[in-house]
Amino acid sequence: MLCGIDEAGRGCLAGPLVVAGCVLHEPIVGLADSKVLSPKRRDMLFNRIARSASFRIVWFSHAKVDALGLSTCLHRALHRIKTHFSEHEILMDGNCTFGVEGIQTLVKADATVPEVSAASILAKVARDRYMVRMHLRFPQYGFDAHKGYGSAYHVQQIQILGPSPLQRHTFKIKSLRQPSLLF
Image (cartoon, rainbow, N blue to C red):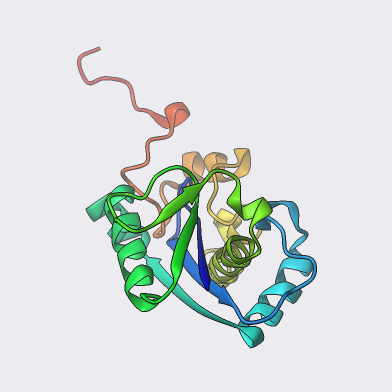
């Protein structure tokens, strides 16, 4: 059996990195790369996947991403998922195994391999739901709309309010770079 892996939140300015591994126990109609599905369709598929698959979701907070770096977080997540699904072949979307042996990669697997599509949906919906909950705590940043990605509104709010409590401080935003102290 195949375990598909994908992540959500790698390129965010705020919030967690979420990596999911998924083994389907039955075919699920409508699977696709989570980015091309509507939020309503993703939610419906998430619930269907959760009922008819084995999966593991690994989270790294914004603080862990800052402390360890993305590559180390992805390495640890892949290792955890590979250990959990040790009897399965493992296929990850993309072209890098982050140093974890025994994992195959395929660019755009989230669009072509059902198990990876399912993992993509699990990671994205789990992360999006978390960011919507964080919007209730920090509504001024608009996390319900952009989910922590670098939208113009998100960058504008950082300029006005300063970094949110969920900000990844190691992610530099070119438009927000402060002038050198030497000038």
